[in-house]
Length: 481
Image (cartoon, rainbow, N blue to C red; front, side, top):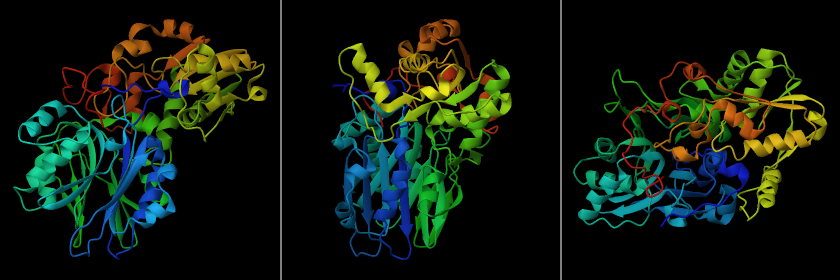
């Protein structure tokens, strides 16, 4: 049965990334659990529902995996006592956001698998599109599933392939021939740390180094947090293995001459602004989006403001291009987790105000340009516009640093089905009227490759054209990571 999620007005009209991953191998034998903890802390924006850490000692005669995971934020799940019990110089961690049907402790990661060859711990960011077929195939040969996530399917296939070949990285390579969709994986075997990125490069993955330690993680900001230097991005389709002999690369799954499909929303919204993904600064991407909005959708106003947090850099870019002053109009309560929708419109509106409030002194008597990263259902934007006008703003002109959402995402971004997308059923002018904005402008579609530095990107949620064919049925609520 699908689990219905209840969250605040701010949350239910925001896109969500699926998760973040962090792995580390210490050649000096240093215990790594605390480093993973801080790495996950830096990746908290990628998932707030559950988290976990699994570690092992590469020098121990028999591989033993210590793991701990739970529901909640990183600092809520892990105490110093819990971290002290995680002994090992090799480890992997995970933060997770789930969509319908998946918010349970059983679905928290890393997944730890015990099988005839030993142990595997797996952390996965993304979403497979052929999960039902793979799951049925495994079930028919005796697999018993403990979770409802596609990551468990990946773990089972790796374990089965490992029985037929000599190394875990070979097993991962064979697994990549079977799974379809978006994935950045980190797999911990008793003596190795392996990272793999799908051939289209939907989800980010990078390599770092700190003294005599190697790190594989979702974003470079996590490397900065633990004092590691950025080495390079993992290539789309690449498998990177870190073992006692150093770091090794297998690029046989890379698509030669094929267009990749990086998720453009990493640059618009998901990633932290201090991250650099595939050589492109997230902060600069957002600045550019704002500048393009000012060029393509100019308007006379007194102040440019961003909806925290991802709207801020785009608002600054709009200000720089237009010459209209940049300011702060919102105070965000960073200490509020998920709040629950209560019956009645007043309760829903108050739940928005719990997380976001307007600085009346900043907006009173002014024409405001409000920059946000996206409009999904429209249920948040109209309330924020109302709050600005109630605080005394004379005009509110809305600019969105992405094009209108017209299609679902099947590759790990929580874009709802089409009928829930406000732009699918309404023209831009109709959306403007629904929101109560004085004007509305979206980022033009042709600007997306420009803000991504010319990289080949996936624009499926805007165009309906995906790097690979989506499933015929929407399976995201049933098998989702």
